[in-house]
Image (cartoon, rainbow, N blue to C red):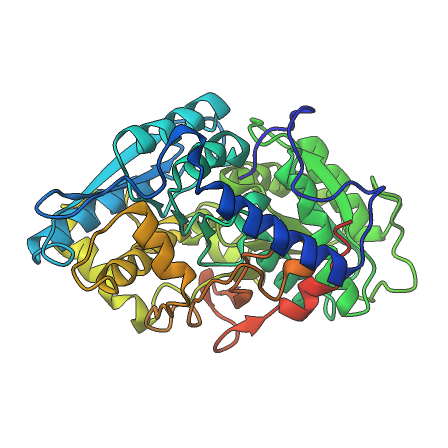
Length: 453
């Protein structure tokens, strides 16, 4: 789910040798956001807000995601975006104007991601909505140069929580891992984390550890894995060895004073490759004491659970954190109505898929932003202005009320745009993914304690 490591890629975190206090760092991030916004006024050769226009022209947006790659793919996101356009246009459009959705395949590649962003600029898109890309360093400079807002990205890169033009609708991987760690702290012995050996993957142990240590547990053993491997026997063996006996792992963890008694836990966060890992895990686990498993939505869904053996498989009893209510919740009825009326049996659009759900919420945000303009010009500038002026977005109970400011509660750890740190806790019972607790769990305070320096 995260981009390949490249030594030349910028980190969105401050270097370890430059460690500021939370208040100083928050002030610096806020000033940086204001400076970035101010820089849009001079435009890098593009007049901000000049895209879009008014009158009878369609409102143009773009949705991108990787398709047909050997790593994580999200074909349902652009497919749903096209279905949404058909549905909204059949109902009269947005403020009486037709919505035109452009889609692009970013191929899990920096060059393709930049190409998608350049196309959005060229086609005068007023926003990029409900998209997935690992390569924020490739696409954000183009969007920022043109002043195009990025609404409801998947939350897979740190830049989505730092760019002043980003409007995330969920807490991304940071919230999922922190929430999962907090839940596992009370029930797990030694914990092993298997995650991609990538740039963004490097941030995942910190977030899981924030939740574990908040519950008085030792940090997890960090097991890196290729994001596009055909099998994971070596990683499964190492993870099981640590979780089942507390032996020294790859980061030297030994199940010290903060370790809990009980079954160890193996946490997987490998995106589409989670099912591949579980194939190796099932073959390897027979040689080790029994352990529990846990993961995050986006790395597992009901389809993956069924393929792994359902109630008799390794996910039975597993905790799974997500951003939204479980798929059978009535709050998803409006999204399912769109799929029923406009998807035309497109099998890529799965209402239980987190990418599809995120895209629905992102278009809900965009629609309310446009409607707030009361028939005025719909441009990148006016859409961004509506969101920056304190517009409160409601999503029918799928998220808390969303409202973005230049520097929110998590600016102190480098995430000034992360406004929704709520997660849901689900569990696999009798082979089915169901809600383990009602409502949301806010992990803001847990994240504030994360050691991201």
